[in-house]
Length: 282
Image 1: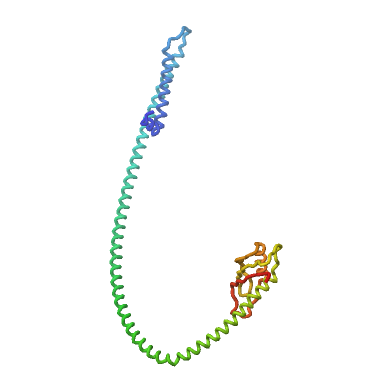
Image 2 (image 1 turned 90 degrees about the vertical axis):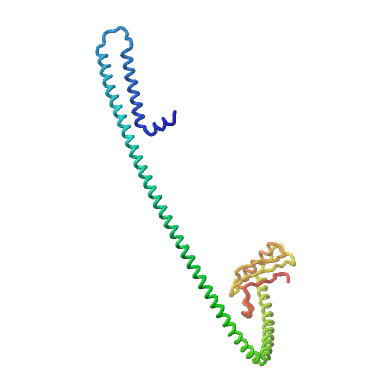
């Protein structure tokens, strides 16, 4: 079917329906006419049949006129609808053009405003840069004066310091030697206490240790323990273990079971992270 004809059918479905109805009526009239004019076999006269055919033809003509009028009215309505749609489309196009013009004006004004703002910012930036340069020059001058004053002050202090230094040097040397002696004694005492502290922890872990079923001599394990200030164990890590996994597990359980660990003999010896070697055969 021609695409143009198909488009007309889609655009005017009512007109197409009327056209089909008109063709149907025409076919009916043609059928009646052929029946009326066809040769008839001899029979008794039928006066009423002729009258009925005439009446039906008149009625068909009346119906045809009505259909034609209805088709004309439908076409007129369709044309009116098309004109109304064209008006609305033209109105929409005009409104769109006005809106496009309004948006174009807004964009133009916005560009002009942006350009003016750029010029303004450029001018402000130039003024700001000039002020910064002036302040930098003043700051450089102030620093030069301060450096000169500082140099004079330093020279005076150096002279005073040279005078005091000879007096204080001997005293300072004596104090340093005394402090080193006290610190060495303290470090020696703390080292001994630290050894005792770690030993007490090892002993408590050993007391809480239960050997695995298959235990071999010489097994050992480096144990890294984290504790809080109360000696409570917060985590245990097994490092460089030489025994089986079962042995490692027994050592880890022993450490956790020994919590809280013994308190240090001196608070200075306390360490949150403690590492020791667990050797059950020692």
